[in-house]
Structures are given as structure tokens and as C-alpha cells.
Image (cartoon, rainbow, N blue to C red; front, side):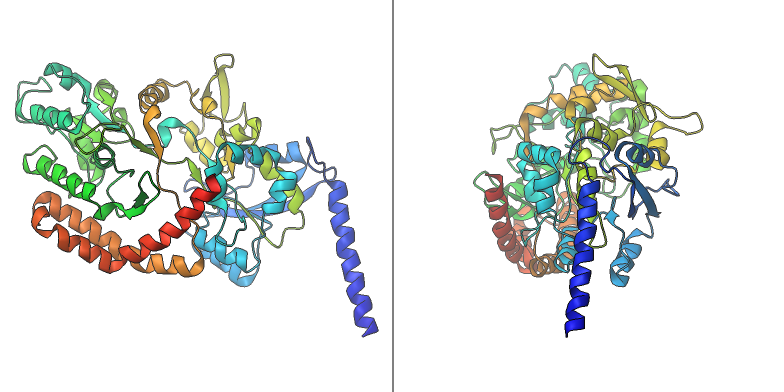
Amino acid sequence: MKRILAVTLALLMLCSVAALAEVDNLNLEGYPIVNEPITLRISGRMEAQTTTWEGNYQLEYLTELTGIQFDAQGVSNEAWEQQKGLMFASDDLPDLFVSAYFSNAELQEYGSEGLLIPLNDLIEEYMPNLQAVLEKYPEGKAMITSADGNIYTLPTYNQVVRDIHNRYFLNRVWVENLGMEMPETLDDLYEIFKAFKEQDANGNGDTNDEIPLSGYNGQNAFDGLVLNALGVNAKGANYQYTADRDGKVYCVNTCDAYKDYLLFMRKLYAEGLLDQEFFTQTQEQYVAKAQQGIVGAAQTGAMYIDCGTEIGYDYEQIDGLLSDRNDTRMVTASTGISTGRVAITKANPYPEATARLLDYFFSEEGGINWYVGVEGISWEWTDKEAGTWEKIAPEEYETPEVFRATVATICMGWCGYCDPEFNAGQGSANAMYLNEMSMKSFPYFVNQFPALALNDEDNETVQMYATDLTTYVAQSRARFITGEDDIEAMWDSYVNQCNNMGVTEITEIYQTYYDQYLAMME
């Protein structure tokens, strides 16, 4: 027993010495982070175009800045999920996961098992930049806090206005050709679509070739715009949950306003104002129509991409419409916050230095590095005083985006926050156009319902119902809009079926966690 005790004490002393050595090697402020080089094993999912993280410019810059070297093992996009599971099953973990795409359930599972370490104390002691961002955006802390109260991952903030809401485009030139005004209400939108259908809106002499509203594969047909106009905080019509202004959680797809949405879309389809091939055509087929100059409106990233620059700028972004049901303009936007990219494992011998490394990405310079890479390598100022910049790439790369995704950065794989003013300064004509469009919507932004961190049992319950509900809601929506099922006659049975398939139980679970989320926001 004395020998066992002696060995135990010796091991504890060695651990203490190692811990002290790390602290002695650590600079609490400024750079480098460590006085003597250390190496972190990192692993994560590579972008589809990437074959290796060796020679990555971002990692080389980070080593030069911080003194931390990287043994970087990127895994292909296709193999990542399987490889990630094998790492945990075999207990062969890297020191740090980046670009890992952990789900909330995985974070809770691996964290509760001690395989991922809690970051709460590290944030408090070593991450002042992150603390400032969390104070500015408290929803970020709510989103990264697991059901057990621990934090196992850090947030990623994309606050570019143009990137956090859906874009709905209407051809302003067509509207002006017909002597009309851009819409303020759903009724206005309907009248415009009707005029597009009945008159020669595109001015080619044919009154029968215009398609007022198009899309593809049953998606992207102004769904979020219509629901917002009806007072529902949702970005689309897929199976989902939201909350009203009083914090009451409900299923979007069973509320009365969703029925009104279906009735509106049914009217568009029945009168030929919604593309009759909307539920069956591919994206390529829709784009071919857009390029013919016969599509009056669509939900898309940018119409100049879909139909070309010659007519693409004829379209203006619209949203924030009103209706008889709702007199408050609303544009559902994501928080711009995602989680699960980074996590520190139990194998990491340098958690304090790693925390300082990750905190760099929440500084001004680090946020830019996270978002677009190293200045002079993947981007450069075009007018620093004006705050405008552009992405760059060596000639051998097809585009700056390919360069950024392959070797310039671990593309958006870290945690981080980049000031929206920098993002908005991207100087290309296309970016400036989208910025201008989106800033008109910005005053009406409301945050969409957040991703809630459920415990294992509740997450299992939700997932048990989710697949069947997603399919049933999508199929019912298509049947209602095309007229295969009568909305008025079958609405009650549809709602009852959704409730019987788990909506009631899921709503109760989400309400509990949403109440906790709101409390953390106070």
C-alpha cells in the first residue's frame, strides 16, 4: 500500500509539474501565445475541393503568430462522419476538433462522457474577446450551453445582413411596364402576379409566356415571405417550430396562419400564377426558364446568377409585406450563429493555450482571418479608408472561392466573429447590389426560432418523430397546393394527424427548453 501511495503521489507531482510548465510557457496577453513551440493535433472535415490541410496558409500564419504548430489531419467530406465516430469509439482523439460539425446531441453525449472538456472556466479565464461577443449577442451563449449547463463548443457568427435571410426577387421592370407599384401587402403581390399572367409584362409581344412565380422541386416559392406577411416567424414552409411574441411555442405547419398560407398558394397555383411544374422541375429546368426572360419572381440567392446579368438586375428584393392577418412588417432572419465547429478533447495537454488560440478568432484581426483568410494572401484592401476589399487568388486557381476553400483557409472551420461592417465592404458590384437590397429589409429582421440543446432523452424523442413528420408535412403541402386534397375539407384531419404523429409531445419539450433559452437571454 505504501508503494502504491508513493507511485500515486509521484504521478500527481508529475502532472502538477506538467501543468505548471504549460502555465509558465503561456503568455496571458499578446502574441506569441507560447514562448516555446507546442504542437496541437487537429482534425476535421475538409471542404469538397480540398485534398489536404498540409501547406494551409491560414495554419502557417497562425503558427507564426502564436507559436503553436499543427499536426493537421483533414478528412474528406464523404468520410468525415464515419471517421469522427471511429475516433471516439477507439479513444484516438485529436487535441482539437475544427470544422467538426458536431450536432447538439453529439456534444451532449461526448461531453457527458468526458471525451470533450467543458469550456466554461477556460472562457472566463482566457477568452476576453469571446466574452465581449457573447455579451453583445447573448443568444450565442444560450446556443452553446448544453442541457447539463456545460459548454463543449464555441459559436460561429456570420452577421452579414445579406446572408442571414432569404431573398425574394420581383421583376421591377415588369411592374413598371404595367404601370404598377412594388407591393406592400399580400393582396398587392397577388394583383401583380395576376397582371404578369394576363398582360405582356416582359414586353416581347406574347401575352402568354410569362410565369409570374417559379421555383423548383417544391421549394423556394416565396413561402417564408407569405408566412411572414401572415405573422409567422419562419423562413419557409417545411416542418418546423416557432414561437409567438409571448414566447408560446407552436408547430408552424398546424397553425391557422399556415392554413391561410396554403390557401394563398393554392390560389396562385390554381390560377396559373405559380409555375405548374414547380413541384416536379429541377433547378436546371427553372434556371433555363429564368434565362429566357419569362420568370417574374423567384426565391433565390441572386437573380443575376439564375438568369444572367443582362436582365438579372431588373429584379428587386422584396419582403416585409403585410396582410389582413398581420399589420407588422416581419423578415425572419437567422441569428447568424452556428455551433459545433470546434471542441477541445480530453487528450489535449494544452487547454489554456488552445483557449487563447480560439479566442484570437473573436478579435478584429482574427475574425477577418477566420472569415476570409490572411491579408495579402486571400484578400486585400481596395480602399482601406473606405473599408472596401476584395478576395484574391493566384492565377492557377479558378476563383478566389476555390483558393479560399482549398489551401488559403480551413474554410469557415473555426469558431469566430467578423464585424458586419467588414463583411459589407466586399467591393464587387454583385456584393454591393445585394447589400443594398438587404439593407431595406434589415429594419424588419426578427430572429428565427433557435436550435435548442436538448438532453439525450428528449432529443431521442424528438428525432423519433421528426422523419415521419417531415415527410407527411411536405407531401400534404404539395397535395393541398395542387388541389389534390381540399384544404377546407381536410384541414382538421391533417392537424389531428400531425398531433398524433408527435407534434403535441415535441411542442411540450421545446417549450421547456425555449423557456430556459429566454431566461439565459435576460
